[in-house]
Image 1 (cartoon, rainbow, N blue to C red):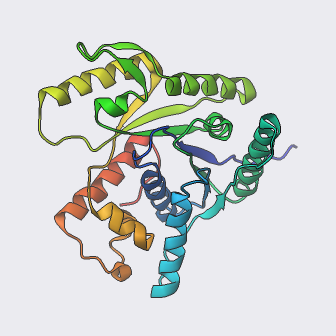
Image 2: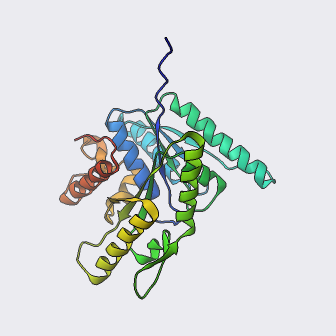
Image 3: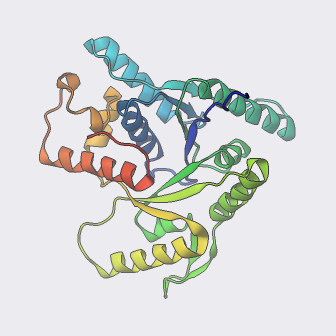
Amino acid sequence: MTAAPEAKPHIVVIGNEKGGSGKSTTAMHLIAGLLQGGFRVGSIDLDAGQGTLTRYVGNRVQYNASNGQRLVVPEHRRIEPSDLDSVLEAKTVDCSRLEASLAELGRESAFIVIDTPGSDTALSRHAHSQADTLITPLNDSYIDLDLLADVDPDTGRVRHPSRYAEMVWEQKKARALRDGGSIDWIVMRNRMGTLESRNKRSIDKTIKELSRRIGFRLAPGFSERVIFRELFLKGLTLLDLRNPGSGLKMNMSHIAARQEVRQLLQAIGLPTTE
């Protein structure tokens, strides 16, 4: 009788080559939601230049130490890029470091969340190919839609996919060839306008056409809220606000924002807590 194979962790990659889209905020809220669901979670920061997720996790650890709290924290890794002169050798080292971190975290974690840089690098590409779920946060504007496709400014019609969309397609093929797996690509629409307008309807039509043509699912994202910046400094998420030690009083805006997080988790298909 052979032993049953060990379950592999579910890998969630947060990817977008544009800055300011909310990748690290999204990553930390997904991590907190999974941790509060009772899952062991590993996290990896590939954005060595910014290191926002690393600072977010560090702020959370410091918050626990300073306030005598026991908020759950992921097992975190930060991968620094190789400084080798050879591009090929540096790529090999970087990818090996990522795979080593995935193997190490995978021994204990049910989920691993990877935050990627806002640029096209070999390491980011390799991380994309490891994804079971790829989440691309996108601000709801034509400026940010450029990440996914070249759009005709007069008609709103899609001319052709962007370099990033083509890269994701290539990594989907790489994943299928490597282990027969598939990548569930989800575009998360952040900062959607609350008022109906001609521009909003046009963007909605264009992004749905892109979804069919390029092959991703759509999920509701986060509104523009000051609370996200306040929470980062303490390492907190909206899901932590019930904690009496947070030092923040819940208001209707916070409740609405927390519901956005839960809706995102549900749309993605990841487990949530009430």
